[in-house]
Length: 474
Image (tube, rainbow, N blue to C red):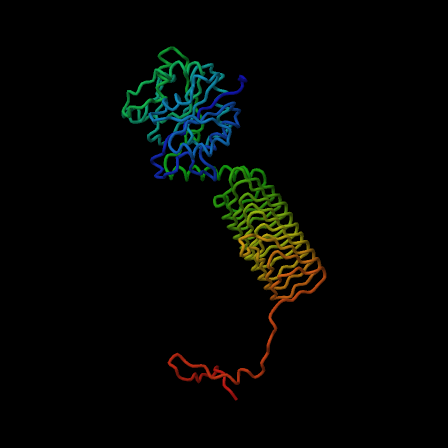
């Protein structure tokens, strides 16, 4: 193993009873991703050579999430405490420096891990426990010192009233040499109120054996575990605030950052303006000089420089090219690409559409499984009828500079040539050649003086309606 690398054991076997949820605690989403992913990402970011995850409750679900993150899972057969969990991770096969942490601490960052490891190396200790000072320690284990030196960690259920007054708490992170870990881990007993094997007891065992043991103080956020839905919500709020600060520091203008939600993997360019209520998630990227108006939802979407997403629009797995305009109240579904300087207006929905540069669909339109060329005008109420009775999807192709009149239906598969004109109210079932005019509508019939020959309307009580507005025959 590279001496600069370290191994990490993540404890993620617990159910999380206080979450009141059937979902394993570490899989609850925090700012859009499972809690445990934040911990694993931080470990990887600090240079961890190997990450082992101890699984238990909901093992199959947890494995499905974490194994793609290049970790190795080890099952804990029965949840009998943190020391038992570490024993389940085959610690005898570990070498060098080992970091042990809980899988429910989403606010920890790679810089925190790196700083803890650096201080551990400087102290030349065999074991370090990471601590933090909290105003309200609650049920967290207390750090007990004597003349400044660490003497023990006492769990809250086993602590005296005096010990409970201590504000320095165990953050749930340990750094230990593999040899010391394997020397003292087997000695831990279950002599406590819960009859569990507490990893905290390794501190007292190592001290009694004359090992150098230290407590490394970290930011209070490092100790912020998630045990309830309320704590999950606070962690999510903190992560969104952290991301927004970073974006504003990079030149993004946020009208009210407290009401804007941008997940960690999202990117936003400088001089872009984001209005309240916007939610950017997944691998979304927004270029420079863009405008994201109120209440827009963008998921896994790319918005290029100078584009505008108007209020209340919903975009998912779509691409919006430079200087295009989308919305308000537009919906772009997966596989849609809006061309440069194109315009998609209010109440327009598109799915798997390549919409050409400078083309326009102003309002009240559905386009699905279609290719629309450049400089095309799509009239109000246009629909591509892409789903056939054989339950297959078929494509509509509209050439450059075509003009589509309002209330047109394209029954796919159908192809419209360049510069063609489609008359309003048409139902197009056959291909239209370039530069042709296609009109497919019922014949208009006009019957003059028809109103004068119709009987008078009848009122609700069955009598003839004699109101001034009622039509009368001559």
